[in-house]
Image (cartoon, rainbow, N blue to C red; front, side, top):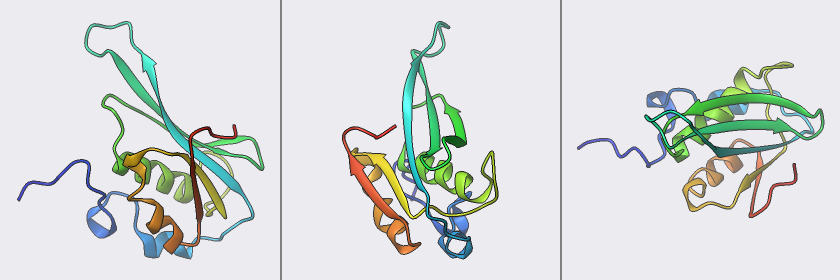
Length: 129
């Protein structure tokens, strides 16, 4: 059976989102938001690329960012969040208490897993920052 690229992959087969490891990280009273945005390209290879970013509300800092060439999947978001928690661009590794994501059907599969590692995930149409 071939892997389904849009199905969430967690655990040892996932590149980064391993719940037992993420749950061990220190949890801080911090609120984050994460999303991917299309950026138009001028080259002939791509119509657009996607920029993924995780922001900390409490510190006004970018914790992780990633560019991808295809529309993002739930695995792209999971890996971006895990990167922000395990290897943030600033500060030390930690988990937030609250995370805002855009209300997209693609992200829904990840929300219960975030809850399992102690993160309150809020999906809404418009993000605060």
